[in-house]
Length: 485
Image 1: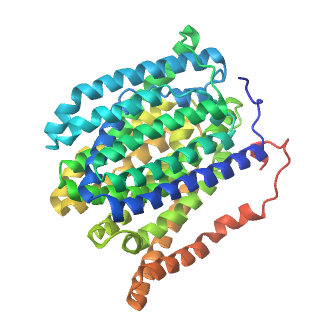
Image 2: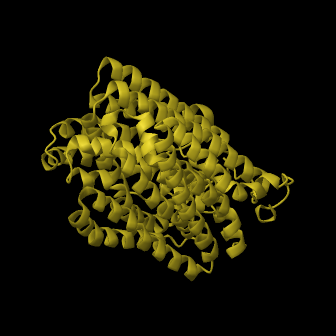
Image 3: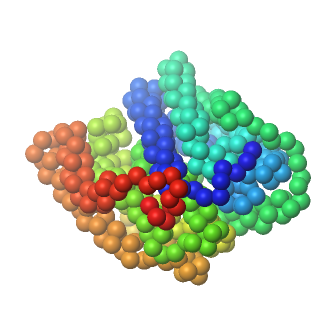
């Protein structure tokens, strides 16, 4: 498999961005709509709580042994070579088998700690999917490296649609949390089949020492960063699972799922498009403040529009989509969306800039700063405000992570704080307007649907100034560089 050129032209970047937004966005819509069906007609709150603990536990294990193999294939100049990819695939397979064995060993302990016997049965089942995922071909990551995203989108979207159909159909016949776990295993199998069919695979067992040294050099910081990132931003279900009843954890899980849809789409845009561009630009020594500002501004504008809507109209969205017993998810969505502005729109591009430049130790340091903030703020927030106070503390801890990543970007000479400041002021103002429109529309109509529609219309007008320059911009010629776009 060969490298697709040394330059990523502007047409390729735009096409990659459109594929990412259209494909991954459609996948999130499928996941979201299937989730609504599962919430309303299939599973109970406690079922989602159990599933949240299972997948949170597995995600924790994966992060504690993450070597950044996918990112190293994208970031390393030799990442497209067969020796490098096969060495990465060998490490990936060994890691998956070891983690699956560890999951089987510690599942009884997890069941005892959370006082939930089902965990001892479901965690080993979920670990089977982890084994299958670890054997996934590296051709998927090479396609991401070269922004050949049509095939990666086909894989992701096909997996999402099949998983949704399977969970709904199987769940209607057997409404137990087991279905959610086995559905995830079946999705892992289908994903493996689709990658092999659409992209092929020439992976083999290999131990190429120069590639191994490069992967481990990159991976030591990626592993630490993944551990700290999980502990600081992905362990919410495990932390809160020890604070609240399992049914209420299921309500929180649905609020987190709703708030995560825009952040996952934006995160995919950052990782799938912005990260390869920044990596290539850095290797050419042509990455500066101005380019970084231009490259991330569309991501921040899109994040601001969606998250401001959720900050203002979270209760209306939950009231329209979920049954009345999920009403508490409304204020949870508002808090989570506000925290996502810091963690995704502001900090996300900076974290991947640090990784693209090979300074991922700074991203690890930033994740560690958030962990320190959580340790300090969560007990205080819970004491002062109960579970809502703990959620606010959880979201606020992202400020420490953002400050650390800003310091790291300053060390590599690419800062651009002006864009962050202006976009944040606009986001806060837009969120306030969304809240006022939400309150007024609910008083006037009492309809969650029309209230949400009113908020969307007002926010679209507020964020239109950021979209207008992009709409006016002419399509660049294929030979133009990204910096000329």
